[in-house]
Image (cartoon, rainbow, N blue to C red; front, top):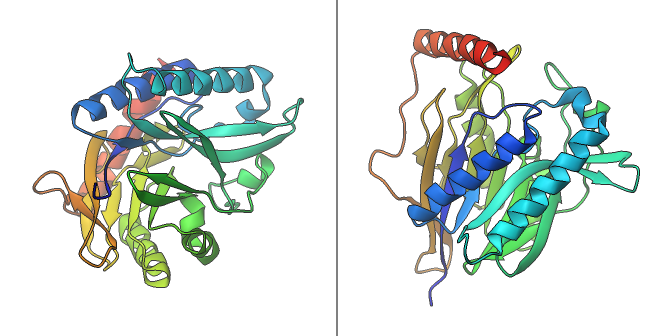
Length: 294
């Protein structure tokens, strides 16, 4: 059988601290993606606790809830009655009995496959980011085979530096899955895609990039998840400032290289004009601030 994999990108608006609610969103979204034929559903950075969790990470109760949620998702993925596809979900990973070391991690769960976790290598500590206060850096790549395709895992800042993508390529990756919580700035999507193309030029690997959407206090996340092929072409770009569940098929070409193809027409959403982008950011930020704080 030829290698192939349908990957859904789940661009969600999540609630910081609501682990049970976020876990339920993962489960419901995975079911919807399954009904659309997805083999794997990729969720944003720190999905289970929301982003940024800040000092909530130091509360023992959060650790217990995250570990319970991850165990429940693993059980459901392995339960034929649930029929969930594989999922890649962001979560805070606690190490040691006291949980004194915390990693910003991504966990891949698939039926009949041992749990795979990747620890974010590059921790941003500038402007709105303060991750070195909370997290320890990972130091190695994680490559997982699904549908006959070797997938390298990365988290947000990892794609802004050269080494994590190169390490994944050296470990045998044929495509990169990048989960993100990248806040909105004017013209930020152009910068993201420019950086992604730099990694593609260095590694020759297509990149599947899923971003968080929604407002959280002073931050707004604009979504605009995207898939860029090994030639640097945008195959898919999700809409800005709204939730979306979009998919690509990964298959091999005649030369054996992995090629992403969109599963729907008009899959590349147009860029917004600057004024429209700012307006939508303001509306989303205010709406989520009001609704999430009730």
